[in-house]
Image 1 (cartoon, one colour):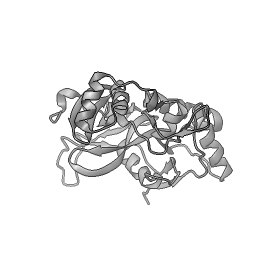
Image 2 (cartoon, rainbow, N blue to C red):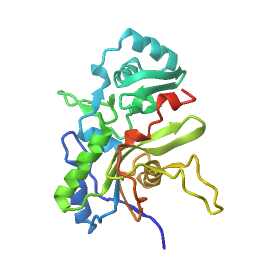
Image 3 (tube, one colour):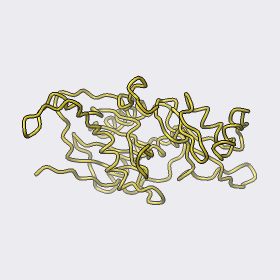
Length: 262
């Protein structure tokens, strides 16, 4: 019987800068009697990757430019946070009260360049006081992050699962966020089915299935969005289509000349 099995890896601690995410995952899986098998897909929340890579900014250390101040007045956001967003963006796509959509430096079109405060521990200064003004950025290169974690896991346990780094993004025409892939290693993120035939013999002419996003969305249901503490999910049973080579998550991005809505 065909089917997928997904489960969260328990015991993942609070990640801090410099942590070896791959080693922590392997350690916790072994501690709980879990093994990785060839063909498994390891789905990892972007936030723990960003924290391990030190992609954190304290807003009190940021000096907003005039552009950031003017844009902050339009979108009704903290000027320092807007400056952080601009610093990690190629361009502003949309700006209106409560909404700032940008093209983030890795090419993702998303709100606030993915800059987020959720599940980021407060900073502590030299006096011992805590500040809650720390935000996390997306990994500088989530595809490279996924590839590094995959290689490190293979070194540690001899199995190289496909690795997806995922984030939660909104969508232009639908309410709510969903898990999407922003880093991919070891699998083809898109299954191009053009040229195949349906059960009635009609040729498929536009079917390109984003497998990476579908797996990201499924894993996101287990991860949760608040205090669940389940940032790593194993997917078992996914059968990759034959003939498609692994590719980075950036291959998912629609080229600007084919984007009818930007």
